[in-house]
Image 1: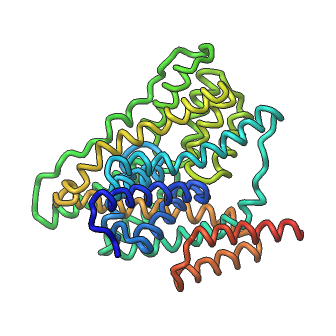
Image 2 (image 1 turned 45 degrees about the horizontal axis):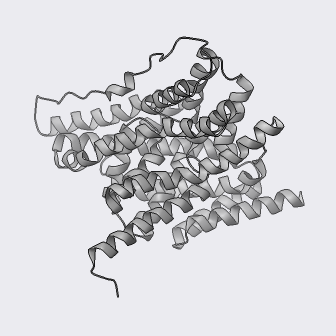
Image 3 (image 1 turned 90 degrees about the horizontal axis):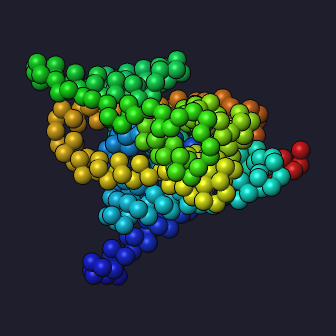
Length: 386
């Protein structure tokens, strides 16, 4: 029998948030789309912390603020489940495992001068990740897409994403289209003004070029990146190169590519690339400050936006805008899934593994974590035999 004691209930929720996001931090391979898909499977379908619509609302909010979207979803879901303590624990517990793994790999890199290879591990994991993303897109899409226009926005977003259109423009554009449609439906001549987040314009140099290395400049540079960056790991690569290679001259291009590779092949948020760069430049203090700098804005933005989500949903104007952002987000997830599939499904083994994982996800309530572990072991076995 469950206790009716509010303190015990609160403690249980805090523990649930901490344990779940710690586990996800160790097993969350595949990037933001995969992380969000795993969260959906766990917190909506299995644990029922939130329903589909609430998850979609949180996803829309996370998509509209700068920073790593999957980390911001972890922070938002932690806040939703366990209040302010959950906000902190959701983000920290998701980030911490990846940070520790990256620290270990960075120490190996600094000592031996090469990045450890992990391709064999991802060979069996990525096909499973594709199946997880596809299952989540299908489940979320059934709830989010309610008419032909919304379907068209999702498809258009997918096409424009492959044409290289800016991610933020696609999200805002989807919101504005549905907002305009709602205005026409209500025969209103007045549309609310929608501005981009003001911090998205903050991309000016914080320091002069070619300055000597220092921890404060390292921290402020990562803080700026975390506060303004929208988009994928490729966008992160562009920001990092602009600051650390071109402007500051602290890294070489090969070092930068090694850092991005480590961020991609380790579980958890790709932004732990900051941990790797910080360690290479300044040891443990640099790693800790780099990590803090790039993730801190996400906690601040979530704390600001969370109380506004219900107001947005209750406003017919902003609800229409949020629905457009949500549909565009699903289009972006589909684009990421397609890119991963092209790069991953390269032989009969990977194709069959992805299909089997997809069947299991649709036919059973299996935890995706187990599928990822089985995929990793199967991939390792095939590589060893070959």
